[in-house]
Length: 315
Image 1 (tube, helix red, strand yellow):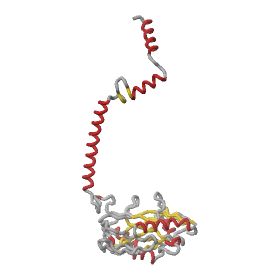
Image 2 (image 1 turned 45 degrees about the vertical axis):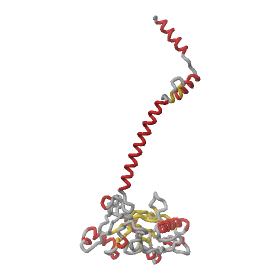
Image 3 (image 1 turned 120 degrees about the vertical axis):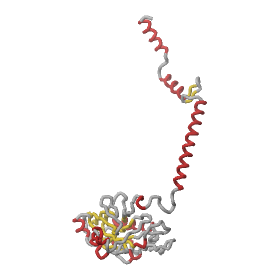
Image 4 (image 1 turned 135 degrees about the vertical axis):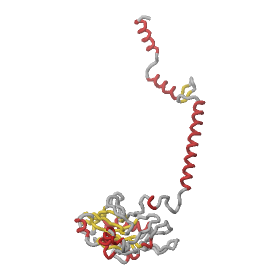
């Protein structure tokens, strides 16, 4: 075949091929359903039945295997105690702390204006919400009368910590409670629950160690052999000067009698209120609160055995 004949044959072939939008639509339709081959999406009915049966068996076996593994996992769990305890727990037997009010979950700043009731109302409501949800007070802000849990362990009561101190709940004017209306805010300090952890008391021997001497210096005459001491201090020299005096209720800290935590029904963790009586107005103060007992260590970076927050009283 000569070159001219090849070109003519190629041109005739192109002219004989259908083109245009209609042809493209027909090709798309044939791709979904081909009536000549009786294929749906490129497969016959028999092919679809085989692949459907395969995946049905495959995923049924996969789901069954997953269910058996999940059942085995749940059979190892204890409903009353965590699986990982002691040094295997995430907290490594070194409880941390929390605080209230914390009106914004992504912020540790406690900021209010003592002359504006609306600015500190949310602070008060946050503290009351925590006390109410934890069973410390009822919906009318009256102290709960439950004194023991089901195992006979005495439960913590906030009577002394609130009603005999400047952190008292005022039933007649809720906006004036917790010292915020006077510019002397109370901050609720809570110790994290660590299952089966027991505080180790200082004794005459451990007080002679470097850590024991540090505890004596920090706590002074508030150090006891029956309580977890608590202190709050400014992180920098300027913060120390601006914070002024701080009172704690109860003064000695968290009593040993409420430990260890065993997930008892109605258990309530002990609380401490810190009252900042002489805090400077109009400046942000960095506050670092620590727990003190023989087997609690502090670390500033990850706040082990402690908690950090900022305090600012607007003017």
